[in-house]
Picture 1 (cartoon, rainbow, N blue to C red):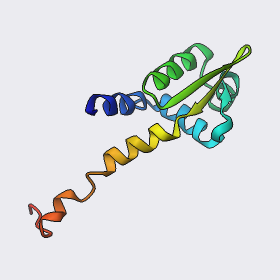
Picture 2: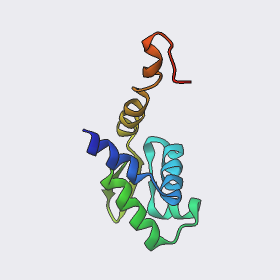
Picture 3: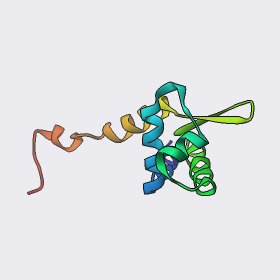
Length: 102
């Protein structure tokens, strides 16, 4: 499970990929075509295709072919899993009676 979570976080580990993901999150469930994403980000088509491939491999973007176009959507369930995973450790060290090192 740790490797799976790391893959999801790694997919978002570049400024451009994070920008693309944020654009898709803002677009909601309808998603966007590659052209729409390119218009909103200014990322060159070949570079954008690479970033979308990495995001999809990391499970944070879903792609659906509709005719000649590919609709890209943020994978909200996966994003929630990643957020829950990292936040599950929140304040765990404070549960020992409030003791801290310092």
